[in-house]
Amino acid sequence: MQAKKKSTELYLEPDLKYSLYEAAVQDPIQQAEVFEKIYREKHGEQPHILREDFCGSFLISSEWVKRDSKNRAIALDLDPAPLDYGKRTHLASLSPSQQKRLSVYEQDVLEATDLQADVIGVCNFSFFIFHQRQTLIKYFEQARKSLLEGGVLVLEMAGGPSFIDAPFEEDRDVEYDHGEQEGEPWFTYRWTHRSFEPLTHNGVYTIGFTLETGEKYPDAFVYDWRVWTLPEVQECAREAGFSDIRVYWEMVEGEDDEEESTYEWITEAGSEYETWIAYVAAFV
Ligand SMILES: C[S@@+](CC[C@H](N)C(=O)[O-])C[C@H]1O[C@@H](n2cnc3c(N)ncnc32)[C@H](O)[C@@H]1O
Image 1 (cartoon, rainbow, N blue to C red):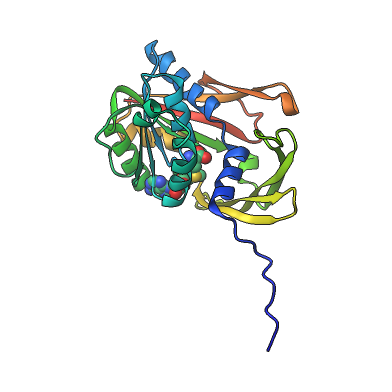
Image 2: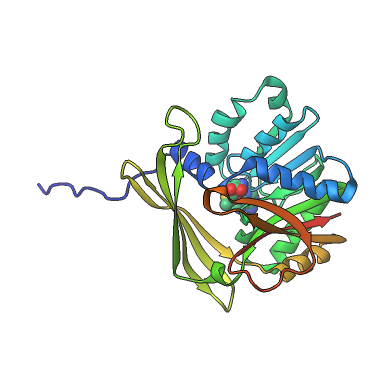
């Protein structure tokens, strides 16, 4: 009998997968602050109802209901795996009052929700999953129907020459951010641009993790994206009926570990950017 070959591909169990993802790419306090700032700069008051689209483990919604006892959040995602992780971790750690103000639905964001929101937030370029213009406009129309008067759809985007450069990879070391090992090395995060096609603006991007203990998970997340441009997104939002569309641009201060990002409403960005991050804010 032949000896069984040892598999080199390790199974990444969901709890580890989503905790590594959150530690590497999410900053729920900063994202909630951006939503509040965008809404406040238009209306002079705080928003209270957030719908988090493509929510994954709904980390931002969990932060949202903690920030203010008047806040409510609705979180939508198609995939039961991150939703289940979020329910067992984030939802379970909220107080009963906070839990009551957070609703999580396994639902396609292409369907409107009955409960209307002040802000619909879309982070980490998740709407790049839609490849066709028609689908993007349909999504924007459904989002518009799910917003209250004066409400805003906030779309986090990335672009610039370096973002469409392929093949490309970049590593970043991440430390434990809580618990007994806080501050100690945890894992290396690898962001890869596997391919990019200029004719379609479709690209394949991956996230991989290598734990300090040596286990490697090179393709933990694989994204097949249409890299939409800022003018395209603004045009589609206008076609979907949004009236006031603003672009908030990332401004970075400090260096390395001291880096801090703020987002400012701009009408001109200049040309010095290799990769940029911005939020498009489309008001009803
Ligand atoms: C890049 S992850 C975003 C996770 C997290 N919200 C963040 O900002 O990092 C994209 C998520 O979108 C979900 N998704 C993809 N298409 C969807 C759709 N049509 N409706 C709802 N969720 C969708 C996937 O299941 C996945 O959890």
